[in-house]
Length: 489
Image 1: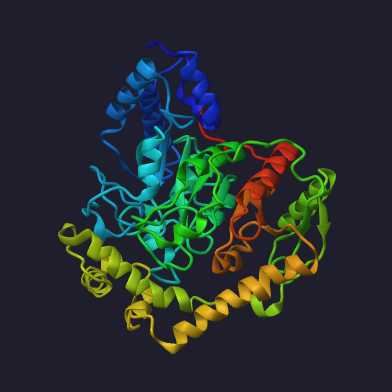
Image 2 (image 1 turned 120 degrees about the vertical axis):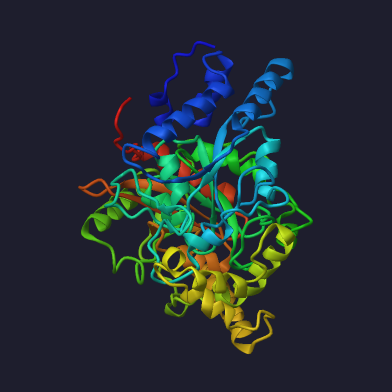
């Protein structure tokens, strides 16, 4: 097909844009894959050298050809039919791509089957274009590691300021790739801020769902209490379309059982510019605004004014109890060993690394390649029993739930009769993560030097539809997002 669509058209193309191209026979999915690969070559491997993509799927072009033929013969499966997606390299695929979690020790390890979210994406007709770089072991290797660095793939750069603007972590490659238009959307994962942080840093919409809304099967784990996958997109509507394709009960993940009756098959119905009217949102200032730069303060005050203009009631301040603002990774440290060892057991003979102990030993045997920033968190987790029977773990887990839910988010929502909370950037990610509650971030503006900042909405469990509705109204009413400046070709 002779197409007028070029790689420049991909910079800000939405899922709806691409489907319109398909319907008007302006391009095929197979040709679209080639254009995205060309864009990756121009901006990820050369030019600004973003280093966001770790691996390309060698079957992507052939998969696209098959989906083109399916479209011709019988129509489409849905809005994701023929849409290329990049997924974070800690999400398993049962194909010709390794799943490394950014670790050199895992660079040649191939999973036995697809993760749930990959199964659902393929069933919806999405094309797995490749995998994205990430902060190694989803930023649970050491305190000293920069966001976006891994021993396998190196350092991710942010297209809004390569080498200058923090790419956020740990889904850094997914954020960079989507911001630069290297795929229509991407999948990230979050334990505590790993979707929200790179989304705000790359001026994207990132949805951190309720734990259990999406199955975690096949995702390299940190914490069963807090882990989840989620979409990273350039528009709220795209994120809503993707999320709807990923929900459902998976018998391999017991957390999904609680999602029955809560998940939606369509998160785009009812989206309009009036979605904030009459909504009561609380603004926790204490503990979240004190470390903001002047330009971030300015953008947040602007966002508060925009929310009011769009019909929301903003309760300011609506501070969370001080007891809920502590920073602590005890639960993650204890759960990591048991969860990761179970993942290695699932891989079986496909990996020479059979346990966390093996991983620590491998890194120690290859210090120049693997220990540039150390492995303090891996060692701390290895020193636990891995059985989750310790008093320190049980007490910490109970405290996390109590301080984030009944004595945290739930308390302030009830006290002020609120529908949700708003935070600057990813500042509130930790408390929502401990609660297992959902959040969504939306672009709010930029520093004078062009660094992005998002505004994050959080709510109670299973309230993704409300979050999406508020975020869409804010997005439509402000239209703050601007694509990064990349060389034209």
